[in-house]
Image 1 (cartoon, rainbow, N blue to C red):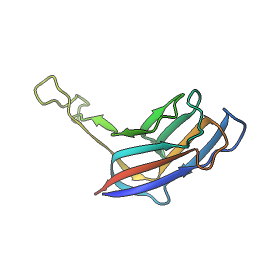
Image 2 (image 1 turned 45 degrees about the vertical axis):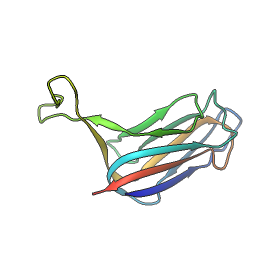
Image 3 (image 1 turned 60 degrees about the vertical axis):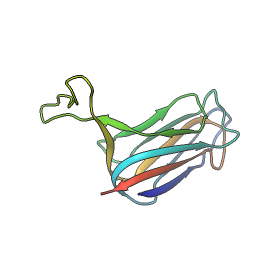
Length: 128
């Protein structure tokens, strides 16, 4: 498992500063976990964060609005068969797996204060 660190610096006026950062290189495998570490002065009532893949079609791994609470996130997607039907254990409980990645991670912070860094994302990638 590899840990990737992505610090995001924001610029602009208080409560409207924005910033975008990317992983330094493309990642290949699955996104096992994300840890979002907000700067101590990021405003809790307005700060937004979105973590996606860089290229189209984009996968959203995490999105949180109006919060600057540090968080562990374990992004998962429901498994489907070739017809798009959910795969289940017992016809009722869906099976979830980590999201794939074969791209750089993109982190966007909005409605924050100008901070360096406003947030740091630690991505745990199971390489395959």
